[in-house]
Amino acid sequence: MKLVTVSQMRAIEKEADASGVSYAELMQNAGRGLAELVHALGQENGWDEVTGLVGSGNNGGDTLVALAWLAQAGWRTHAYLVNRKKDDELIAHYLSVGGELTESANDENDESLTAFLNQSDVFVDGLLGTGIKLPLKKEAAQLLGKINFITSEMELPPFIVAVDCPSGVDCDTGEAADETISADLTVTMAAAKQGLLKLPAFEFVGELQVVDIGLPENLDSWNSIQTEAADWDMVSALLPERTPASHKGTFGTAFVVAGSSSYTGAALLAGTAAYRIGAGLVTMAVPEPLHAALAGHLPEAIWVLLPHENGFISDHASDNVLQNLQVLPSPSSAAWTVLQNLARATAFLIGPGLGDKLSTRAFIEDLIPSIKIPVVVDADGLRHLSALFLGERDGVREDWYKKLFAPAVLTPHPGEMSALTGLPKEEIQSNREAIASKYAKEWGHVVVLKGAFTVIASPDGRSTMIPVATPALAKAGTGDVLAGLIVGLRAQGLDAYAAAVAGAFIHAQAGLFAAEVLGTTASVLASDVLEAISDVIAELE
Image (cartoon, rainbow, N blue to C red):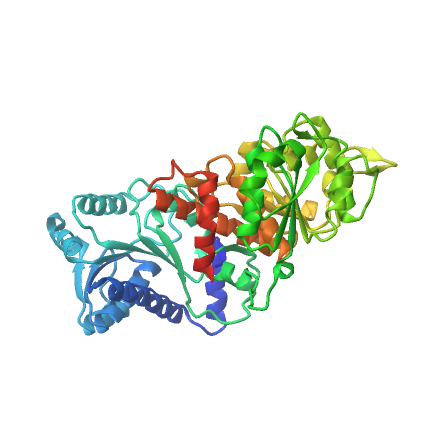
């Protein structure tokens, strides 16, 4: 689904109107789409009574159209009008199909509102639109407060559906009034509004669904939008096909350089995730002492044992890797060991759990310029890169990102992004999408800026936001799982951007699935996220 600002959506609707699809038609399409979603919920749950909170703007109009459609479909409907004039064609049509109507100004002591809420299976919030700015006007704040109070006192409150946005949310900034009604489902029109995927607004959104409003094809204002929010259909379409004639070579080989004596589990999590996402073969290059601890937990892997210093990859290790890539430096180094084993690899991951030793940094410096297959760089790999290849040599600036086979996928959390850019974490967090997009373009690589609402930015200007913010993923090791998912998808042939989007979405959903199984976000471990990957993939197939 596309992700737009309020002003962008207004421009889209204006161009649509000028192109022959009038505002009135757009509203009819939006209201019908809203009604069809509500009706489907009713059929699933045995619901047949709905109340709509109808404001004076377009969201109120969408609500009236939906209520009229539902009345004709056999629902008992109540429209609760707030500051909307009754000489309205939408109201006339609604009444003509048997809808019931009450004006808030005539509802003494909120008796009708209370009765409607208690009787209804579904409550449709169409009071305020996407263009509101906080603070709320006194009348709106008081009404929303009353509704929240009434529903809080109910043993079984109605299912709440917000029209385009929960009333009380700023759809650009993500701010939310204290009186905002928390929705179970937000039905957004044509595209999701950016503020809905920001905190605190996101806490009021519930499930987010988009309905088609009949925009004409080839709108310049629509086609120019390059920001999206990932959804199930999008990610399902990205995953590689798995035919009965497939064999392990069909799905590629992921080569993972990871782990140290301090972070043994990082290698296991990343390698297992690469297998879970469907890679045909995973080769694990780890410091030699880790092999005994890891091999029994991942018997499917091929192991490349690297020279080490006290359990951390040594500066001699790059030759071990490079030999496998058929780029053969000195046979005494760890880079030689890696390259020797990379001949059949189709994607390469470096970084999880490597630690911060200078010997490992020297290994990376030797290795990275020789890697000529798709690359994913995570965690300590990013920190080491940020300290390498700086300054000038023969009058040419040698920035780290120029040494990576492009386009690489970089997966920093805000702290690592700070190390890469020199920007304070606070500045990064305050403008995540813009900063991820800026540096993706500057570096020529796909940037996966992790955190609540992970942002994936492409060098060509596209960006995708993952519509998930959960403490279930705020646990050591979950980033290693994400890196493994992305390299596993790259190994199977997905391009850098598609692999990053699909990997990040599956990772986020696996966190939610794991929390649901355990009954709490607090107890979710990275291994639980790993175990939930197969369930997410099953939903996508």
